[in-house]
Length: 193
Image (cartoon, rainbow, N blue to C red; front, side):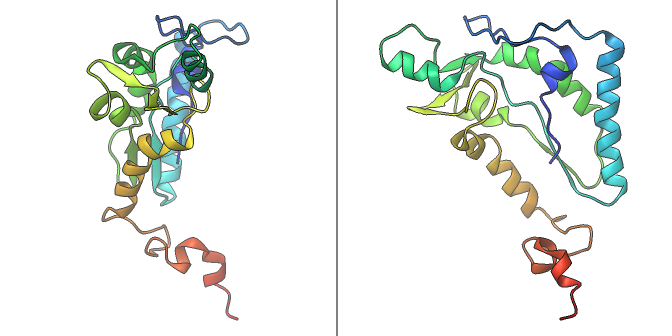
């Protein structure tokens, strides 16, 4: 899989969800257009190089950022302290991710390229209208403010990965079916002993 923190890498701005969730870090300056364009070209070149080598590429789009350290926020709220809600504004997520989504979309459709959109469930079917989930019931969907927890990964990534890998083009670059000994350990398949 190819994944990167596109919104930050392309824009060089820390997250500020407009609801009190402000990500703090080392002071950075917004990336100039030339830097953003060079980063987008680098993404495209990396993917196209792998595809040209006959690899299947799973391109993971940006994970919606929270702006809060989600487990700490849930704990504070449960203990009666001031903390943010268990959702974030979907319009903010779309705006925050727009540059990265555009850069990934510019790669275009190609054989062997699979796209995974982590926001589909947590900003769609499972979420209240106009919101993106940060937790499901008491369970945090994030390990911190922008990395999925195991539960979050199961919701954001696993269904799409399972579907993509089970699709008709589910053979590795050697032509081996998925989960066969040849695809899982090709070095053993070449061993004559």
